[in-house]
Length: 237
Image (cartoon, rainbow, N blue to C red; front, side, top):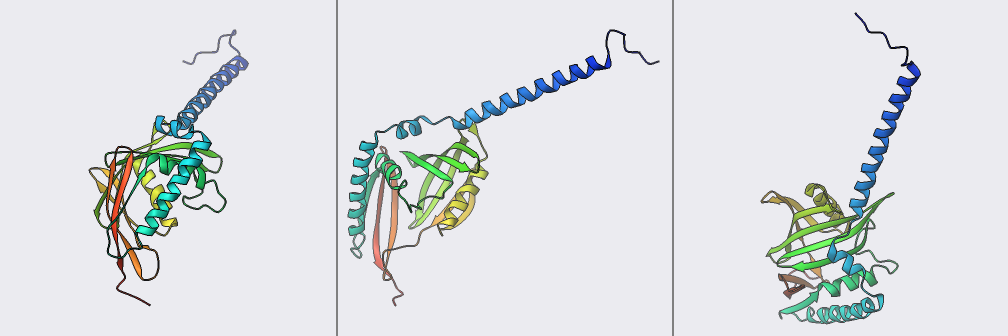
């Protein structure tokens, strides 16, 4: 036996109630999207601090960084002699802040904007703005770095976030793989203790007759220590 609709409840009122419910659901959905958007914009503390450095200080630090790069360039030209270099996170962040804004800079893919980093024991925390179409957000990666043999760097993705939101480490690995391939690096994807890894093989030359070996990389006290040698190529023109 079917129930009839009471006279006090008309079809118009039922449709209006449904419209109110759907409107409420839509507004809640918009609110969730807005909160997710805000979370994606949240900046890690080290990143916020790096972006706030005075531009004049960044210019001075960048000049010091360029001098260090010049000294390293001179050192690697000495055949069969060990060389070493030390760069702080402040050095590199100043270089990113100044040099990446210059026309023609192509150190990073165009989707990566305002990259910054900080160092701890064998770990790099890297953050940047990711721009893809109309979307933008703050990508934060915690990376473990090891050098099992010269010119073979293993990057382990320990943590991956978009703002404060955790995102798939596999997706971040794919993003990094594509970025490295764009720069013509030899890369290979793997896995370590459940975390995705990317192995990058360097082929560093400063002319056609000499190649550079990166023998060791150590992270300590907010700095990275590089050491290696330069050897003469077996194949000469």
